[in-house]
Length: 279
Length: 279
Image (cartoon, rainbow over all chains, first blue to last red; front, side, top):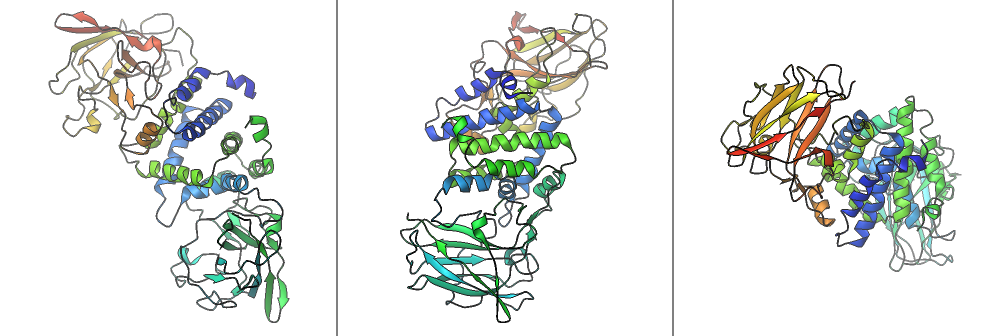
């Protein structure tokens, strides 16, 4: 069915719902809900959704809400896997080429982290995996150093889980905060991150399976970088050569965020400079 | 922002999500999800949704799922109050003028009901309210009688609550089933239903308040009519003169479903014939 034809099916219902919001006191809420209702109704019209399919949608949304806990956010997974999170990110961060691209925040940030000295390791126990030195500078759009920026990093262990998902890992393992030096530099030691599946034992996992999609994310290290006078940057660096760089389950990969680890003594070295936008 | 302009913002993200579904084995699921993703992304683009607004949407959906219980279905309320349920109903019941219009099923059907003899009362305790005799015929599209149709009815008490919402009412109060006679006729005694608010102490109630909308439905009696060889009819009859006929919170009113109770002895009489479509 063409969009034009479907738009003519019961238009009075869509009009009635939109007109019912005329008394909304917040014009922005009314704007968002008007666009939402128009597009939700378009989905029903264009697909000619059956009553059984509508029931399945109600059951899916209910199960998605019911599996959420303090440490599991299935609606964020749903938003991530349908590309909504990255689209929101893209629209809100059109910063141009001089600023490091942002990507999804993800559900595994655990709040304020211990602050370590430059060059320290973020491991709280030994891990099998390539020992890796990550270093670079925090700079502005013109390349000038930003001193004292807060650099928060977190990543998976080689088993593919974050500490908050895995009772076997010490709390705070593979996450820490650093401050940039007067010349903007930062550095820390870690192990190379690995690719891993997002939690796929719930409604979103079932959806991905039904759509013939895998649940994997390519290996990455999360960064959140804050400095007074600059926009906070939420991003990852991804490891070149990963099998899932072209098919990230949450569509978070941007070419400028892919790094090539170099041999460095017994391990590897990653160098990456982050460019922040002025607030 | 015009739709044309917004469609040009980050189109590669929408393309990537749709292409990721190429391996879906169920073509209908792929079709529905493709239309859904296109329209969800359109909402983000057209509104230029902020990250704070996205967070509020995640929180709203999570709360909507978490308040659901065996007897409360907040996502159905959300679908109902955004006109989605009535649009699904409309698209799936384009039966023409010779068939009685359908309307929303609602969340208050309680499963198999006691079957009573023609003319019996559906009250299990006395109620203040106009005593009302409801009668008519179950007929096909040409007006021929349908014998033995199952007629399930349910409605609110004069307090504005269904028995399943109200611990003070006997279970099964104001709901029962009947069979049509050889001439298609049915009849039962009840009290006149009243208008009432849908459950408005949860996320949907807060949404309606923020949109300047009231939560009320005009007075009605639910009917679900089943007969072998005919499509099951799910509908209501609404009482003429109700304050909320023009602003039903779930957009369920159709002019052909509005009845005018007539004086009848000490009480009232409602006459309504139901026309079923052949299966």
